[in-house]
Image 1 (cartoon, rainbow, N blue to C red):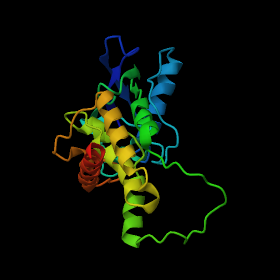
Image 2: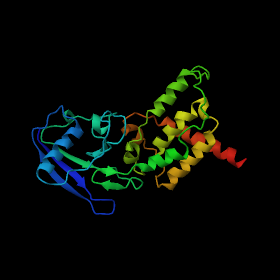
Image 3: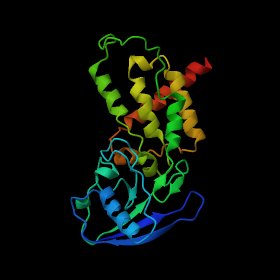
Image 4: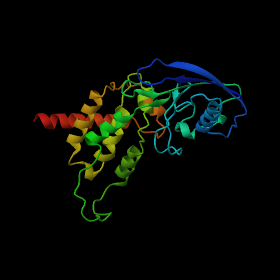
Length: 249
């Protein structure tokens, strides 16, 4: 495959960025998108040029680090995949591919295609956990949990915090991410004691960090590589309003 790549290059968050054009030949359709970028970087290094910086780690769709905006879509033109799971067979010979970093104020650019997603970590630190005195290992059947609730909690916990929901939203909202992290505990008995404190703290931190409000277009659900459901946002709102009422009593 012959490809033309238009890639965003930027030295740091404060410098002015620009698109640079690169040409690649003989790219295998079975090559992954990140392997294609590795090939480009190898050529740039051989030419004594700065390689394109991009984030990645597991390359198995688990870590959420490989978020790229590809031809106007988070993670590219396939559904329910991360960038590292995207393969070049989803493109055609001679295609021009535009590659950009996430565009959101809470995700400042570090360099080129790498953004700082530590804002998500700060939200988690505010309440995305359960405080327990562990002691011995409890019996797995000590707390009965209905299967449908356990399944919903596991589906919510599948969120990998990649930021595609923020990148897809015109308001750069983090509601899908926060609602998934709230839901994975709100659905389980173990999460009930701290439910009000958790949702109030996480929503407050989300607003402080500059994420926008929900746009109700559901682009977040459409572009989520783990198919987190928008029903979690409704649950987040219910949990927040319940906590607000309790705090004002």
